[in-house]
Image (cartoon, rainbow, N blue to C red; front, side, top):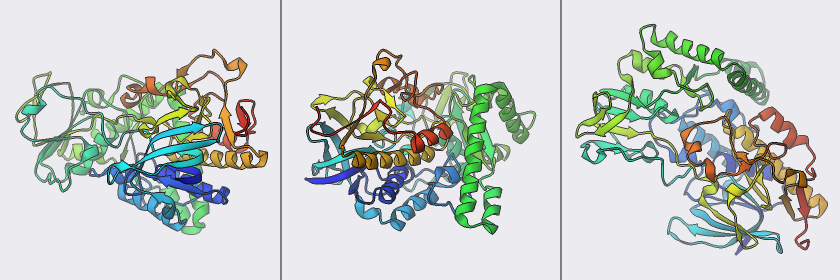
Amino acid sequence: MSHFDVVIVGAGLSGIGTAYHLQEKCPGKTYAILEGRDAIGGTWDLYRYPGIRSDSDMHTLGYSFKPWRAEKAIADGPSILAYVNETADENAIRKNIRFNCKVMKASWSSSDALWTLETRQTGHDTAGEAITCNLLLMCGGYYSYDEAYRPKFEGEEAFEGLLFHPQFWPEDLDYTGKRVVVIGSGATAMTVVPAMADKVEHITMLQRSPTYVATRPAKDAIANGLRRFLPEKIAYAITRFKNVKLQAWMYKKTRTNPEKVKTFLLGEVRKHLGPDYDVDTHFTPSYNPWDQRLCLIPDADLFDAINAGKASMVTDHIDTFTKKGIRLTSGTELEADIIIAATGLELKLMGGVSFSVDGKDVDFADTFSYKGMLYSDIPNFVQTFGYINASWTLRADLTAEYSCRLLNRMDELGMRQCTPRLRDEDQGMPARPWITDFSSGYMQRRMHLCPKQGDRAPWLNTQDFSADKKMIRHAALEDGVLTFSHPATP
């Protein structure tokens, strides 16, 4: 059995960043990163579909401590993966990673002030070593790597072509000259369609309902200009500040004046596709902007593919699959050699790990989220979950900083346990959804399994980077809610 002061679960963007903060701010602490796969990168190593890229600019999706140097701010997946690997190697993090080590169960003992982790060696599918730690940091993302959301379609077994989900992209797939249909209207579909358009005979994006899209240049002219005459770190900090403010401003406008934002977004689509294109049918959702995540169209690539006649949008419902493609409820048949079901993620909080505290199983749906990172009555436990209205890493960085503050404060107090507890005045407060004002299917399908948030601080799961930054960096840790104790204390 091995013991570490801290265990980080996940060696993706969040896990590697957390390890950096831990090494810098808590240099005396031992730690290990447990990664269920055989490589660093998480999402950016898993997904292999054409055009895989970020939906956020890399000046905010990148780490606060490591400037993004590439000319393109909207980066492709391999470039992001290289960035994460480079971070790990520059900071000697890789030696602390245990690959093919999947955490199956985590059990907390208050008498010992320790988590005991049961692991499995995924490479051999055998029981792994038991590991103990004082603080457990979950950085494994929010969706299942092993399964995707893939509804069964009527008659799909009759289709004679190739049907698959992009999360499991076939190796060496040759789609040159093929007729392709992509089912879906989310970020993956918006990425795959223009990326494949040049090689295919034709590609169709089939959606039940449209999504708001926003186009922007893949290159940040201001960032690239600043780098020419300012030190790299200063140029990066200025660009990061600018983009954080722009993200926050845009989101605020969608809340305070959604009709104005809607008019602007649809106007931009019409500029690219022309007055005769049916924008109302194919690009005008029934909800307000940011009720679901906006999809990014870098350099107008999707619009270019449509204008070139290589791609088309179809908004309709599937009646049934046929031998040669899909028949729609309108009676139209879409012929295809390849059908890609870009139908979404399968939400899987905490990586599917089962938890217990002092022998009692934990149901996170019965807990309240504390500052969006900890959970009521679960000791020495922090989860990294990024923003839904801004770049993921903004919050991941803050969560790592908070974890380090917590560790150092516990040492100062001579305590080994910290637990958020509901105060008397918090008892009976409304149990609100963990994430509000966000109707994306992948989240709504599993919201009943998620922790809750209350109606007052610190039980709010805010989506406000500026407010979180002040709270996490400067607010007192001893707030009457976070209880510090020694293992000898009942």
